[in-house]
Length: 415
Image 1 (cartoon, rainbow, N blue to C red):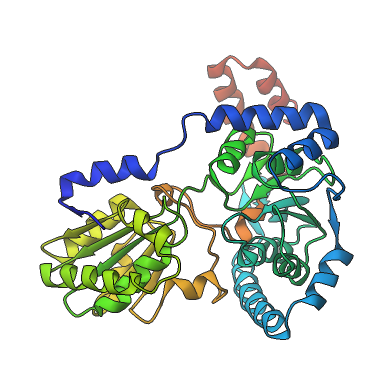
Image 2: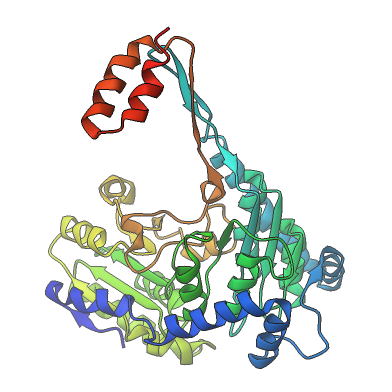
């Protein structure tokens, strides 16, 4: 049950959030190289070995396959997916408007940058315990809004709902393969186009493969187990706090639910509510071990809570406090914040607008979650009609660095 910690014990949590199977890197690298050298035959063999496909099943599902799945799912599910897709798309479109091209005056001319989408994207959606059609929407739709030309999905044992989500989101095709072998297939173009960027959450082998291939491809980040930090003051509703903690705990036995409170009474009330809600929660066998990964911590003030939250840099940050907007500017490291007790993180998971693919394990200190920007580049340009004002400094600085050719390239523009 969610351990009670003191501030010095937080070092234990940092280690726990970063734990990784010692052999995951080696196993993933071997699989990636097997796909690199063996191509589609190796991918098929790995898919059969790991139970992703049967011997006679294809390595690619087409847009027609996805559209057929969309027609098969219940109308209620189809409508919910379409509504979520529309909300995600509208938010992504609003984000896209904030990325504008730049033209700026410099001595002798102008410079600037352009925002250009990558050409092709691979989007991974986990299968396994919980197929996640929501992750298909979250990864594919912003890519389309960014202007990406080609988007392929990879997902092991895709359900009709996953295929339908791919159709609604606008994916070109789907590879019904998972794990490190799927990341390799997307990166190398084993059965489709070679992908410039590969995104999406996955298990430790997916993450290890993305780490291994980074540099050959771009990635959105290295996702670890899901996590949430709830800050609750004395007026919070303990049942809502408990519900938010359990919503993350049920993702995975390795998930990390964390609670900071201002009073022992609130902490105890939340723990009692967790116990009560677990009695009839179908996912309790998964949530119970996850609770042991997190902590509950009592602090003296909201200022202390903010400081600890910034140190932890949680994936999800839920603010069950009075006047949550007042402390939000002081919170600087989190993947996504949920402001006020009505703003359940679950709403974002299912398409309120913001993306649910977020940095974990402290990654929020240096990166943001997946968004339209993940698929955009901003190369700069320079146009000089009269570079005279730059020649002397360029020749001098090039001389200091011993780069005579640079100096000559500048001085030849003096006439």
